[in-house]
Length: 212
Image (cartoon, rainbow, N blue to C red; front, side):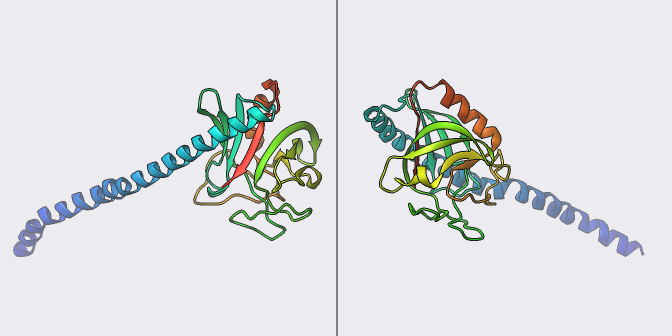
């Protein structure tokens, strides 16, 4: 019995070393490897957004649209990530960001956006839009959108509008996706309230640009 006890006591330093090593390996090594990738992704999104904003401001200037604010939607990002940005053209900065749904193209569910300008297609449409007047729609307040490109010229008659729905979360849920719309840029109610604030104080219509 004494020999077994002494043998057990002799193993204690080894067990203590293993106990110390494993939690520290889990806690410190794994997150460090993931952090640079996330940061690199955020930097790439921001760089792309700034480039798009330069083009958006130049376009707004020629179309008598707001050169203060722009709504930029990067559909190349997963739906669970922020991809709707309120951009301050004058200060070259992001004012707000939120989640936005893309169209299902009349399927049960579409994880990655597909595009069409065809009436009743249920798909999103790439291109530039002018945010027009508000009205009370099926899901509450909504804004009519005028398509300004050949890729979204039917948006007004298709009732592709900026509106909210309660299936869209307020915060990022990536890697989980969010719900689909029927082609509308659909946001959360809280985010629509923020967007309404910018629309209401802008003396000129705001450019909304959906791109990849």
